Amino acid sequence: MMPHLALDSLVLAALLAPGLLLSLLAGFAAVGKPLGERAVARFTAATMLVAMTATVGALVMYLAGHEPHIISFGRWFTWGDGSIAFDFLIDGRSLVFAAVTVLICGVVAAFSNRYLHREAGYNRYFVFFAAFVLGMLLVILAASMEVLFAGWELLGLSSALLVGFFHERRAPVVNAMHVFTVYRVSDAAMLGAAVLLHHWIGSGSLAFLFSQATASTVMLSTVQATVIALLLGVAVAGKSALLPFSGWLPRAMEGPTPSSAVYYGALSIHAGCFLLLRAGPLLEQAPLARVAIALAGAATALYAAFVARVQTDIKSALSYAALTQVGLIVVEIALGLYTLAFIHMLGHASYRLLQFLSAPNLLHDLHEIENAVGLAPAAGRGAHVHARPSAHGRTLYLLALERGFLDSLLDRLVITPGLAVVRSLDRMDRLLCGKLSSALSSRRDTGRIHVDD
Image (cartoon, rainbow, N blue to C red; front, side, top):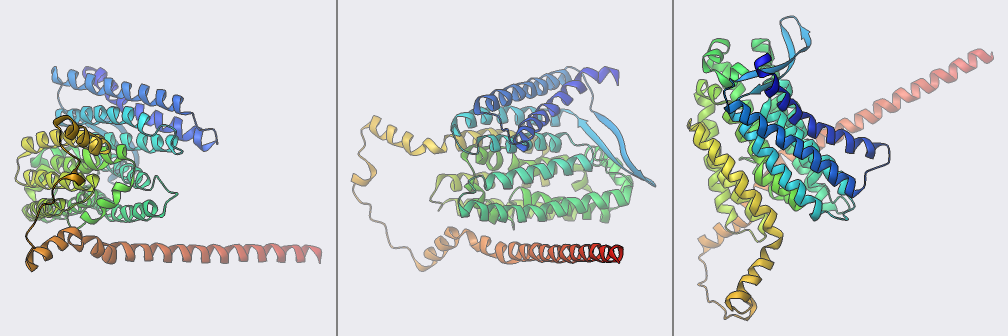
């Protein structure tokens, strides 16, 4: 343990920095004394600087000669042969992605400070942002299902809350509920994988499952590995907007531009890809799941490229362009091209970040270029005559414009039934609470009558 003490300390510092920011901002807001913009900006900058320094320092130390290892906080709960552990896996791939994640989040934090200046929900935004950073780091460094699930939940919750950030309008709230419902399906699949993993091997450890194919071969049969891999595939599809869950992606553009950049352009949409990358040895043991994931990735890439060509707003066009690349990354992982997929993921995350952050200035920059080269405004140019499209072309255009009607199908098959179940449970809860309250009140009244008598 001692040779890794300095490295482990830096990794823990990187995890504690966003956790401290989340506790600080949420704590002051909870007691009705939210911090001002200047204080929030300073605390955010300081904690992100600590996290960046720690992750980059840990990466440098690891490359200097350290071996992959696990930071363990012991077993927090045990039963029979099973246990719940909070472990973190330290290796080159996790540290590189963690460093890139924190650097991107630092850029977005600085951009958000100016973009949301004097916004009523300024403090609330950075509470969600801190939860997102912590969730991403937990997913990246997870060495146990418990840590992975905690990070996965933080990602989903912060994403949905930021989609509904402008809650004074109805559309963001409706779209946030839509996104959150799809995330519940993803989270249910992740929870199912965690339960089965505990049931079959008596532990939630991911270190051997995601790092050594030989260990997973010994511990899991082909059928068991296939079931867990398929559940992880469903979880990834929900979080990364793969088919058939791609319909929620344009709805997520209701959030502020900085959150769209960090969630659906740079990091959150790649969290599922990174999980699949880590699960490469498991996929190699489950050929059926591997083929299914490859087909889902290829279908998603084709669908997103088809739909992106007819989008009329820049954020939707960028989101579907990003989804095209995510589909290709998933195919690369399914084919076993892990190094290529990892490089592709890092480069794509950085590129989309720049595009999303510059999206609000797109029209302004276009007009500046037109003025510089002496072009007249678009409205003053001669009209272009286009041939009337064929009936087949109009059908394809309508299909792309309506995004393959996938959003409507998702709403009917997943969202509406899900909300119906939630409403039923809410009515049942209110009914049971009402009956319990009446029974307690009746018992108190009976007691008083008995005493009076």
